[in-house]
Amino acid sequence: MNRRVLLGMASALALAAPAFAQTPDNDTLVIAQSIDAPTMDPADIGSRNASNVAGHIFGSLYTRVEGGIAPYFATSYTEAEDGLSHTYALRDDLTCHDGEVLNAEDVAYSFNRAADEEQKFTGNTPGYIYSSVGFAGAEAVDDLTVKINFTKYNPIAAGMLTEVYVHCKDSYEAMSRDEASQTPVGSGPYKFVEWVKDDKIVLERWDDFPLEAPTFKTLVWRVVPEASTRTAELISGNVDVITNVSPDQIDTVNASGAAEVQVIEGLRRIYIGFNQKAKFQDTDGGKAITDSKVRWALQYAVDIPAICENLLAFTCTRATGPVNPPGDNTSLEPVPYDPELAEKLLDEAGYPRGDDGVRFSLKIQSPNGRYINDGQIAQVIGQMLTDIGVETEVELLDFSSAFVPLIRAHDAGPLFLLGSGGGIFSPLADLMDFSAQDAGTNYTEWKDDEFFGLWDDIAATRDPEEQAAVAQKMLKIFYERSPWLLMYFQPDYYGVSSRLDWQAPRDERIDVTSASPK
Image (cartoon, rainbow, N blue to C red):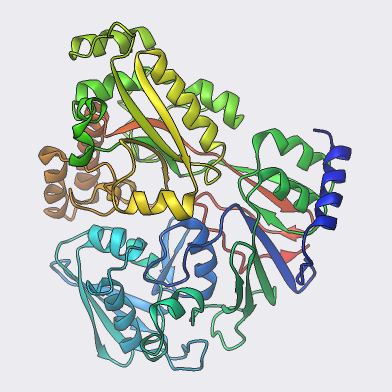
């Protein structure tokens, strides 16, 4: 599609779309994402599209920076000698957006509220962070000192806690769950103003925020599901930043003069999960994938470099595990595409083709529009598996309303396509998806006593080199036993207006507090 046609599309969309009050100017920054946030409750947020918004509304004790973490609401912290608690010293000038003073009692409440079993929160904090660090409760030592307790030692606990959103006790005790979900009372640089579901979320700068003030007074997070529409809106000047630019539209954006595409080496692990939950083992296919020999055979059936080249417009090296380079195990070789070997291994595993050519049947469930060309990629993989006699049905689901509930309940599958956010400050951060056999993020319900037992070896030493050596052992086991059909680390394509001075991140954490007009 050439630029003239696309610009015509943009004009038509502008005419057809409902009036939009906020447009980019020196006071307003507009960002378009593909899907809406399911919730703004800080204890229930579990997706990147939601946390990108929430990260501007709420603050945290520390924040992640290039190469590590830095103080944010806390000025410092100390770790107990046994590693089972962190004690944080807080700033003395914090308030929430309703004017309430924010102190240690509020921080302790924020942490403990997310862990409240009666509330049954399922967000990133209780489902991933707390299971990873063994959260055991928080307590206010005095007005400006809070202590976070753990059941186990985790060498990267401080980094993990940067994802816990801090809010005020009185505000949230006065709200219902619905109110907390839809009308957040924050503590960060921007205050919530308005949310029109599946359309936009509007934030305004919080002028009483004690840290450096953002440049833009108003932030608007728009929901624009179609990639082509996001591109048209960017070129026509209706938005400043768009996510997940379709690879076939990169040249069009770059030639427009209105914007450019920033191509980022992303950290998100894209994989096909083999769900080994008991409910799936009633079918031949669900039973088959409990055998690591079958899972290994299926690895050979999928041509990952061809998928990258044809559907993502980049040359990729197939992942050998869940850890991003440079923390990965470099002794492991990417699995090559070899469908003949895949068939041979399936025969040897006891799954020959039947008279109809079928060995067994499976279903892949996948979001459609959450990741770059995710639905198309799932369909291609389904065909590649079918080609080796594994009859595969592909079911494409709306990410927020249908796919996320299945994932959270570990009910997606028996195969599912998912992208899990990654990090580079420690290989252990990427391995935390498998922090325990019952971890909320162990969506495959993979049970392997040798692998999970190695976490005890990590906890037994304070030597980073020894911890890294154990992580390498874990990655070798992961590679050999294949709870994931390993794919690639997703490249990220951000469309950025030519008027904007902003650099896209590697970890998908869209932070525009430092963005400014050129």
